[in-house]
Image (cartoon, rainbow, N blue to C red; front, top):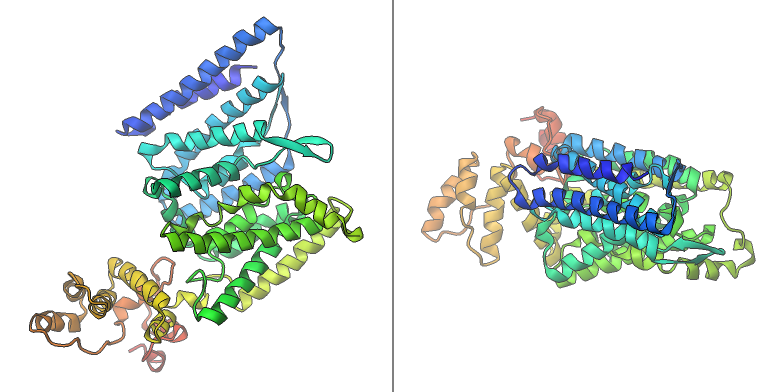
Length: 497
């Protein structure tokens, strides 16, 4: 039976060449292999002394492989548009190997039999959909796995007369790691920000997440949670828009990583309420928790990509109270509704998703993706809009737009800051008026009027949070610019000139 952790240890040691010059990564692989071997030897010796017989059962639970399939499709689709994901796949594989070894050894440390199945797959894929540590800090990735499985085994309570784990083995370590990184101010040792940014790059990614999650929504009755979370957060965002005049999450009503979390992070049926109404309440609380943590993280200047990770462990602690609360109502006393009701709620969620997509509340064409929206609100005096416009314009400048460099330079001057090399970069990128202003600025002349982007700029400045457009047809580019509200582009749509 101990062949499993031994094989896992040997595979981890064999993965050492992945270190590629990172000594810390090399010792992470060697150290994790040593841990598994030492743990195995200790169990073997203690088991013989105590006369224990260890066993292994093959148990293939649908909730594991169904969720893993959905997660894997998302990872592969995301990686097609952000190739750094494919480069990280070997590191996901070694985490999976480590997880199997740890899961088996923790189980045998506590009892005599281990249920072998697909359990580690959704745990590891879920962790890696939200947080990666950089190679030199990769041992923390293994620490998260160890903490997750230890919490699953050791932090338990009684539910419906049975011992059950309180925390999901992926959401708990993600929450703990997030809190530690925020307190230490060490988010730069992870790729968390890059993950949150690049997940939105693939086209129609909201639709893909919705589709691959449907089997789990129907089979395990979690559509209530997802539906309640999405609707609640959309309403919160709409209310914020009415009050503040801008979108809460800037370029979307519900950011893509949050939308992903609403489908594949907090919806674990084992650590969520049992009752149908309880799951609706659970979804509402997740949306509220995300909003609170998003606002709090912005207030303290911490990265906001932790907003969907921090609420989940706190919510896991509330599930018994939620079930007790809703069970006081006679109509909700029955637990775990059948698949027919699950199908009904999933159908309702599908209608809501299609409706939100139709009004551009979700998807690639959300109004917040258009830079003119933010330029107009900045001109109307919104500091929040000016802050976002400043940041996104600099991104477009870095992507090669001469207009964006020129615009960013003027923004810096208006804010009383030096434009640096912004005008020179704009001139180098064939934005002619910037060349003229570079000389005039030296003589203290006021900035010239702000012309619209040139045709060469449009594939970049029309992208929103996506990859630059591949479209090169002038008429089509001007049509997209017109739809986004760029001044002076609608009349050029027909001719493309």
